[in-house]
Image (cartoon, rainbow over all chains, first blue to last red; front, side):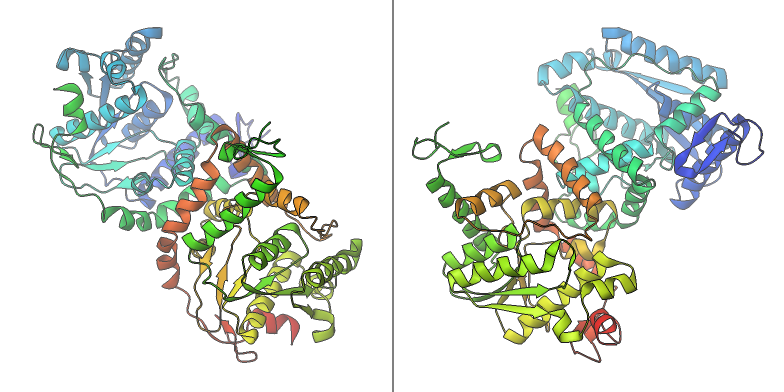
Length: 296
Length: 296
């Protein structure tokens, strides 16, 4: 197997691109895919300040690494959820600290227990819907910290496999609100800063290979509360289609990102946002879900 | 296993409705589902004239039978495609003739060979895209005959399995034009009469059982040219989701039929129709695809 570019021995094969690469040209390919996404979706301008939300998983660390290498003014945000089982939160934090200190990139750690005297486990168990409470909490903290730091954009590590599976799930239930927000670039609006997904053109296995190539240590424990069985099934279904008709997944998501405005129009008529009476962040109710959960 | 209604021995089990029925109450259930679709989607008014496009398969014969029993003024249209392999067209025609003469319902047979001196096999082989030419031809003939007969509506036998699989396929490729037209009720527009799908709330297995119950003989040969492998795969994928989360398929299609107008708006901006300069039926080009294929 030879590299498509230099004909030296290849170390990775990418069937969806009809290409094989050596380590050096895989890296060139990967960086170009991110640059292409940034250009195509107008994610960032030269030198802008980006806050990257990092969990310690491969996606968020890789997106941080690439944006840093591309010369953006990057800082990180890690939310310490306080999940004790499997040493999940402890290992996640350690992995993030090591990554950021090695590269001399600033990292803010937002510790829920320190701020509110309780962990996501205390709150999630009380409410009984662990994953949705955790998701809401993370979204809120990301938005609030990005607003407070006055960064130009908030980046997440979502990849093409995540995004197409989420799109599929949201279409099955016609979740118009999520369908209107699943694009790689969500413009700033009120107190919400611009949200970007620079890994939108890359598959999971490509990101995995980048992490390996650059010796990026990622968290190995998986969240003990995660119930992603359904989402995993959707990923497998799309993978089975992709295998028979290569390119389907990419087309499915890319074309969606062009026409997503049709869902926005449908959605906008129904929801209007106003400031939360406690924290002032935008919400559709008197007090936002975060304040209801953590402050009351 | 006992009938959910009368507690007599049941002959069919419908997990998606949490019900089991004896023959009599399955029939009541089936008729009510069609009546519900007619009412919900405003498909037909009492006593209206309906042309049903019949292939000789279970779906089209069952929809004819039910509309006839419900008291609509029904007539049939069968297109003799002239497919000789497997005796496909000969058997289809015979099955249709038998069905319609038994019930004393008028049936028009549109024989392509008699009208144009060539069969779909002659034309399809010349053009090289058999299934799409056949689909275009059938759609054209249905529209033209419905227009000429001045019926109130043109009915087809599409069921919930077909419609949800087609919806899935069209979403994967974001086929905006098809997405805007996949609803159970397409209003009349210019020379196109109203198009309706009265079996929209019924699954394939339910229709199969209705045909069996009423001793409806259906065509057994399958089209020798059919290449529906991809479509079949999408059906299987949706079935696998339905099995794990019952009700998903129905929700997926029903909610779509409520919001399909968002695709219409996107589509309308781009395509405008005008009369074909040969046959006068609506087309987006100077001469419609049917006239180009069959008359030139």
